[in-house]
Amino acid sequence: MMHHRSTVNSHLGSSDTLILTFKLTLIEEVVTGSSAPEPEQPTLQVDAHVNEHYGNLLTYIKFSDVTFDIGEEHILAHKAILTVRSPVFAAMFEHDMQETKENKVKITDIRAEVFREVLRFIYTGSVQAMEQMADDLLI
Image (tube, rainbow, N blue to C red; front, side, top):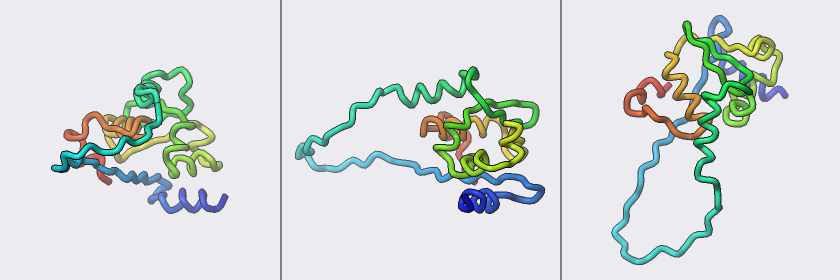
């Protein structure tokens, strides 16, 4: 249990603000000049729409259980998704912090549209507006 508390404490700024950091990896397709066919790799059959379904949760507010207040905007999300995808959110929601009690997180240092893309990345592993927001997404 101390691990999570120290994780949260290491991300707290002045005035008990929470600093979120994300690791973003850009993957480029590598093309080789070999004409030999590659051996067939076993593949896992996964519903091609899984990421889309998780992304739909961002607009399906019925079962959301946490609100992010950013300026005048209120963005709803799901603690279960956030905690399994982010150790920072897991530490925040597993402890007796104000955010856990009120199910509200106030964020002041990011624009709402950028935070929506952060959530989209957490939910789906992709970002739709990468070229427009790349600088804002890098922390």
